[in-house]
Length: 90
Image (tube, rainbow, N blue to C red; front, side):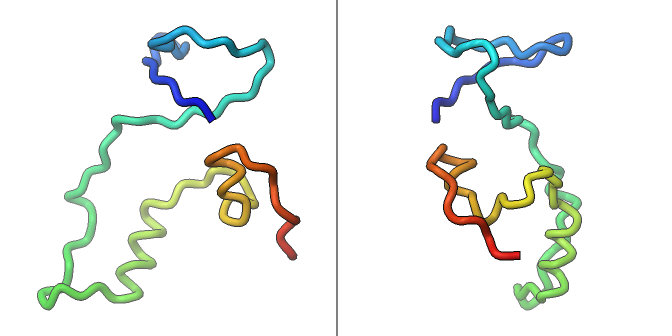
């Protein structure tokens, strides 16, 4: 996997370096630099402990639907481009 940086302007991504990709080659774009508003994260309990309900609430609030059904099972494929492993049993 090769990473490049760029800027999104007027509906087009302008890369900061030239690449030797071919037309039709699939790419994945990950938006960087957008910081979450940490003030919306629930504070820790006074004793510094987080309950399971706190964690589940946090996950629900910040979860992103990628549309990739096998993302957890095939994470090495999506992160590093390794071949997919056997299909996850349904």
